[in-house]
Structure formats: C-alpha cells, structure tokens
Image: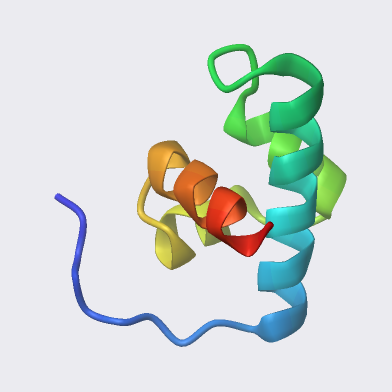
Length: 67
C-alpha cells in the first residue's frame, strides 16, 4: 500500500533519482528499466525510491512532471 503522507526528501538525492530515472526511461522505455538500473546510475540506495515515491510508477510520473 502506498502512503499518502508527505515524505521529507533530501533535495540532492531526489534530484539524482529524477535525473537518473529520466535518462534510463528515455533510453530504454518504462518496461525495460529496472529500479536497480536507476539507483545504480543515481548512486542511491534502492529503498529511497520506495521511501520517496512508493513505486516505480510513481517515480516515472514524478520524473515526467519534473521535465
């Protein structure tokens, strides 16, 4: 279940995640990209994706909004 409670985010970590997600999604498409590939590029812990965004789908939406 995804929480609707706002999560405090580290701005640098959030920015790195969104940039890495945009790059990977643009290169490979949503379905071909793993969360592992995104976090490897962003140099963050995989748990941060789920803590900050709740899911890969929500990260994708946030990355699109950030553009």
